Structures are given as structure tokens and as C-alpha cells.
Amino acid sequence: MRPLLIVGGGLIGLATAQVLVERGERVRVLEAREGVGLETSFANGGLLTPSMPEPWNGPGVYHHLAASLFRSSSPMQLRLRALPSLLSWGITFLRNSTPGRFYSATDDNYWLAVYSLDKTLALTERLQLDYDLLDAGTLSVFQNAEQMAERQAISDHLACHGMTSVTVDRDEIVVLEPLLKGVADKLVGGIWFPDDASGDAHLFCRELAREIVAGGGEIDTGMQVTDLISRNGKMAGVDTNRGRIDASRVVVAAGVYSPHLLRGVGHALPVKPAKGYSVTIDAEGLGELPGVAIQDDESHAVISRFGNRIRVVGTAEFAGFDTSVCKARIDHLFGVLESLLPDLASRADRATAEAWAGLRPMSNDGRPFIGAGNIEGLYINAGHGALGWTMAMGSAHLLADQILDRPTEIDGSPFSATRTI
Ligand SMILES: Cc1cc2nc3c(=O)[nH]c(=O)nc-3n(C[C@H](O)[C@H](O)[C@H](O)COP(=O)(O)OP(=O)(O)OC[C@H]3O[C@@H](n4cnc5c(N)ncnc54)[C@H](O)[C@@H]3O)c2cc1C
Image (tube, rainbow, N blue to C red; front, top):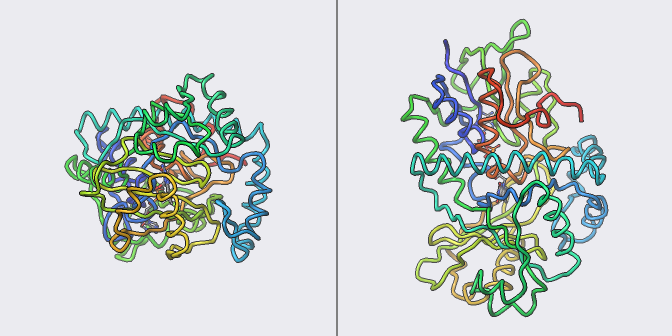
């Protein structure tokens, strides 16, 4: 049998390939970039957070987005120039922001995220993967009591499913993260999620790539898929910048670019890009570093640690397919570091810090698309939004079970790639 093709060598495509290779399938990953994990999976926040499974289109999102058209400091930004391309997607995005739909997507994502983190940690242990894993939970800190109450309400809801969260006061925050001592008096409190973790997603991609090749899979980089080819309602292969490849089974895991490819075979996938930024600082020799990933609810930003590197991540812009780096956004991230870890910020070398922007593949009902496409032999694993690292290994197992016609370990129906939204 010809190899199964996977379009996209980011977190999702590589995770899918690794699981299939391990189950004895012949797999070939086709990746447009010169290496794996160089697109959205490159310099993300690194958080593995079943504790934050809620979609962005929660109740009240309409007001946040409308306000952002006129306020440049808003954490979620909607650019006027992006409005026409977002029209029908955006209406469904807003339609899904009722409390009932929000909590339904939150629950579905939670189960997938928990399943995924289990798979990630088990794989890490079994293959001794090295990607600067920090298995110490995440700590959310709040400067505003109302925002803390909102997060607490979601945590209380997830507690019914067995999620552990610990509400902490200022003193307890400092015990969990002593580096926050100098700023604790401006915090109203925090929530610690002991079962979360963090790690470098790009390093994980490289570790997966090594395992795929060691297991007999192939990875072609610099290979751009230009078209999906179908014949008589079945997948027949793909056209690439290096010619045609015949295949009866193709997985599209091309992140924000998945809808372009799928359109060619008549499968409409409602996924749009939401831009985010990160800045990574070499913190070697800068003294003590945080021992836990910190989420700052005030600025909607995250400070993660990967070995001797510190990364500050944030912002969400609906601005089309633009990955240019805006200096003001990076300055904002340095501002977050200054406000929470001022000593570290004062010692950080801004000149050598690596600024980056990436595009989250956002679905319009807040869940990813995992499963068979509209024609035989076509499979989709895309649209994981702000949770693609958290959900990668679980999504891969869910799809592999479907491809191999085996019972799935969690309910895959909420993530169906042909669902009506
Ligand atoms: C700022 C930011 C912070 C984030 N933080 C977190 C976090 O803390 N935790 C978390 O869980 N998630 C986080 N995410 C989300 C996560 O990074 C994404 O959901 C995830 O990377 C998506 O992976 P992917 O494989 O679908 O897409 P990608 O990583 O973009 O991979 C798709 C691949 O397909 C390739 N490709 C596209 N088109 C073609 C083609 N035609 N032919 C061949 N190859 C093609 C691309 O080159 C790319 O390598 C964050 C995202 C951003 C932007």
C-alpha cells in the first residue's frame, strides 16, 4: 500500500504521523517550510493547559471585539481591514458565544486536552523526549477581582469533571513563585493549576520528527502541496512543487492554510487566523528564573520558562494572514515582564531577544476539526486555535483510531470535520 500522506509538519501533522508510524503505518509528511515546526508551532506560549479549554468566543466577546476596533490597547484586536474576510465566519463565531454553547465547547475541549496531556507525558516518559518540559503546573495571577471571579467560575465548572485548581492569596502566590514577591501587593489573588505543564513546542516537533524517521516514516521538507487530487469521489493524491504524488489516504494538517487546500476538493473548513506574538529571552546568567509558567490575566499574557530561556507571549489580532512583527506589540510584552518580574526584565538583553508572530488556526465554534473529510480517503486534523500544543497528541490518537477504524478512547463526535456549525 502507498504511504499515507500528511500535509503539514507542525505539531498536529507530526503528532499524527508519530502515532500512525508507531502503529505500523507507512507515513510520509509533506512540509512546505525548510524544517518542521517553523510556522505556528514555532515560538508559542508552550503551555499544556487542560485548565484553559474554553473557546475565545465566550459570552461578551462581541463587546470586546467591537471595542477593539477603536482601542489599540485591547488584548483582543479586530482590524477593520480583516472584516470582509471574516464576515460569515465571524457571524458563526458570535452565534456560538451564548453561555450554553460556550460551556458545551469548554467541556468537549477539556476532555480532549486532558486525554492529550496524558498521551504527551506518557510519550515523553517512554521515548525520553527532551523539550524543556516543566511539569510544575501553571499559576494565573489577577490584578482585578472581577476577572478572577470569571476564571474561578470556569474552574469551578471544570471541578465537576475532576479538574484540580487551588485558589491562592498573595502569600501563597509568593510561596509558589518567589520571584513575584516584589509585585504581590498589586495582585488580588491567584489560581494554581497543579496538573498543567509547559514545554517548548518547537523542540517537541523536532523530537517527534526524529522518532518518525527512526520508525520508518518519511518527512519531506521544502515540499509545498499545491492541490489535493480526487478521482471518482475518492482521494487520489496531491500535486506539489516537485510533482504529483499518488495516495489514497491524505491527512490535511496545514494549520491556518488548511482551508485553502480543502477548498479545491469542495470541503469548506471554517478556520481563520488569529495573530499572536512572543518574545524569547536568553536568560543564561540572569539569576533565578521562574519555576512555574505564569499567566497574567490583566494583560492576557503568559511568561514561560524553557530551560535557560524565558518567553513572554500574548495578544490576539484578527488581521488576516499577516505574520509581520509589530514593535509596539513586542514592547507591550516587555512591559508585561517588567510589571511582573521587574528584576529579570531589568537584566534582560532586549537586543538579542527573539521576537516572533504566529497565526492561531481558529475554528468558529471553538473546537478543532478531527476526522474524515467530505470524500473517501480525506482526513482533517486542524483548527486547534490557542490550544494546538495542549491538544496535539490527543488529536493525533483520536484521528489515528478513526483512520485505522478502531474504537476511539474519547468521544470524537464533537470534533467531527463534517459537523454542521
Ligand atoms: C502566540 C501564540 C501562542 C500560543 N500559545 C499556545 C500555548 O501556550 N499552548 C497551546 O496549546 N497552544 C498555543 N498556541 C497555539 C498552537 O501554537 C497552535 O494551535 C498549533 O501550533 C497549531 O499547529 P498546527 O500543526 O495545526 O499548525 P502549524 O504549526 O502552522 O503547522 C502547519 C504546517 O503546515 C505547513 N503547510 C501549510 N500549508 C502547506 C502546504 N500547502 N504544503 C505543505 N505544507 C504546508 C506549514 O508550513 C506548517 O509547518 C499558540 C499560538 C500562538 C500564535
